Amino acid sequence: MSTGILITARLKSQRLPEKVMLPIQDRPMICHLIDRLKLTQSVDKIVLCTSPLKQDDRLVDIAQQERIDYFRGDPDDVLLRLTDAAGEHNLGTVLNCTADNPFVDPIYLQRLAEFLHENGYDYACTQGLPIGMYGWAITFPAMEEACKIKDEVDTEVWGGYFTDTGFFQWGSLLADPDDFWPDLRLTVDTPEDFELITRIFDELYTPGKVFSMTQILDLCHKHPELAAINAAIQQKKPIPIKLKPKQTN
Image (tube, rainbow, N blue to C red; front, top):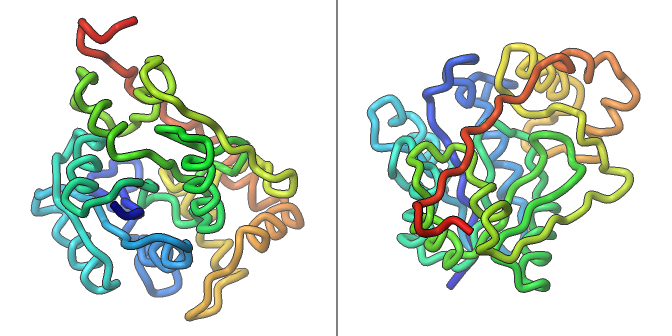
């Protein structure tokens, strides 16, 4: 079985409507993420995972335009959608990221996959990277098992099923000292977030090229007023995980 990147993507956002389609440098934000993910080594395919709802048709158009695969699955149960996508595409290892994080780092994604396999983990995450620069690594068997034990259909945030239940082996890859900045917010949920991302692109973007994590962090260190743009934004609290009654420890 192969390794693939699954991008979680919907157009249902409320705080910043259709945020992943907002234009940056004359391209939808999600296209810049796809450019970055294509640099990840040892990945067999990239799959955009969205819903069958008509509002998400434009995401399928993006996938076709960018020459990546797509999958349309459960609109609300993200973990089930990702698991079904992995099964359909015969993926043994999944690297997952969300479409509202245009700066997911391909080097750390590759390192995370290696970290997962070298330690025999079911699930792996990173610790210390800026919000929005990281992804997650999971084995397909673990995803199938998590779907069996969960008792919640809203799984937009699903990591707790692997870290908090005691059923899985997992680990956290620590960011290198030069990359350690967990309070820097580089995800997009609000207009302030989008303003920061746009400002970074204005400073660093060259058409046809992907600027690096190091360039992003150096820019934010040299210009602290950039990080201040969205520093007051609070991350939404996830819905607590819920297990089927017989699966509680």
